[in-house]
Image (cartoon, rainbow, N blue to C red):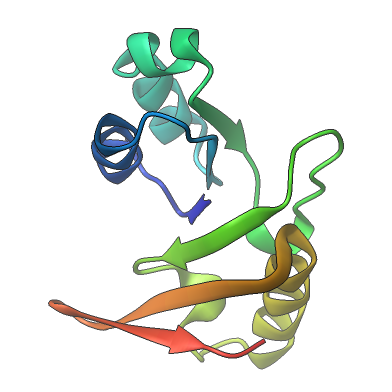
Length: 117
């Protein structure tokens, strides 16, 4: 699962690398989700990829599956500026992961760090 997918570049890249995958990409922007869907028709049609407009702090998975891995790059709710919002976001991420699931967040332009939830 990707949090803050923007136009879906990373989601499409990951889906293209794996045969048996289900990938949920969320973003709070209507415009980003619309562009992501427009540019990801083959991946969506294959059943590998789903985009959902959502704020991570409000994410409700409903019928979606739990995930092995989640990651976020440049997501305001997780950048430390809004502690209460970040607490809510982390709770939602934890609820979206399978037991033993892993969460990664960017710490610099070229580096990701695993975060324990």
